[in-house]
Length: 95
Image 1 (cartoon, rainbow, N blue to C red):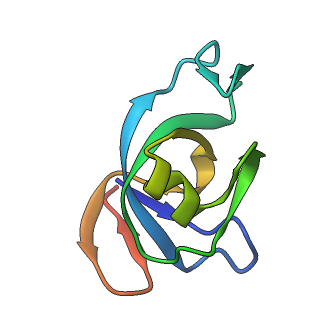
Image 2: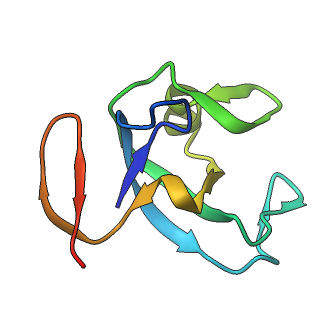
């Protein structure tokens, strides 16, 4: 799956990731992710300095999360999982 920036205008792709959970009760850094987030692990960062929406101790951006192999919470509305095709800066959804 592809993570997109949560910063306006929300068009930049920031990382490829593996979905670990969509369960709102799942924990990341000891905190429940809630219904608006997915629990993911970064497989390949595109923009290493992209800030995490929920920073953790010693882990402030995508690059940190990848280097440390930690699980992060990412807003579900900025996750592209059904792709028709992918360009460098855009995720195209399959209906």
